[in-house]
Length: 99
Image 1 (tube, helix red, strand yellow):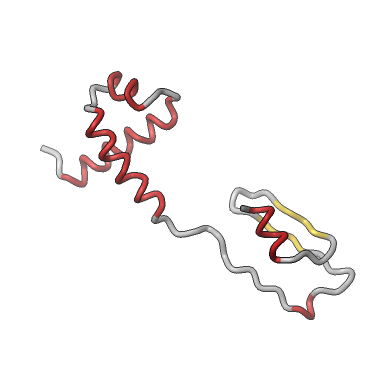
Image 2 (cartoon, helix red, strand yellow):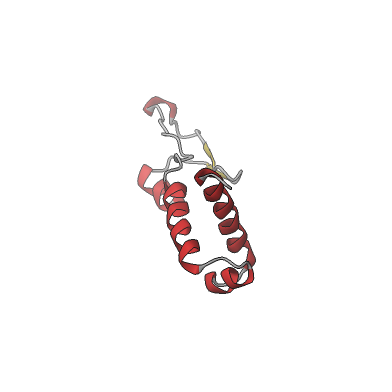
């Protein structure tokens, strides 16, 4: 018999499988012999766990004396993309780009 933690881990694996399958929740449950209400319960718990992950952003601090007319700034995003600025930009502008 599986422990509660093992059942939760198994269902979370199934949820990841469903997300990659392209099927509706009901179709996935029917295909894998999972009661829809059980899947739905664990999907709610899965979403809560996903939302509790710490943010991958760090606070950006720029010294005001570091920005000269020839200064540039590079912002490297968690997925590896880079934004390069050849002039001073405001924090509001940065927020609008990454949100």
